[in-house]
Image (cartoon, rainbow, N blue to C red):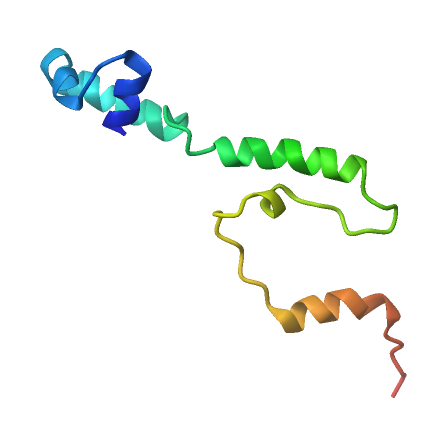
Length: 99
């Protein structure tokens, strides 16, 4: 995080920051970074959102909609329970018998 902050503030190295920031100021920057990262860690999400909107605007009518994750090659994918996914997919097609 300190290197990213250096890039934003124009400092050549974190040592320069440590000379001009005291501990409470540095802690303030760390708290700010947790809410709104000063690096480009969310740039792939921003690009994924734009790419998915464009892809969905031009996809075939019956094609599955794209999500931002489809355009984020390094993002962690959520674990999918295959059994639950199949049940959900075919839930409306299952006819329940009485008795």
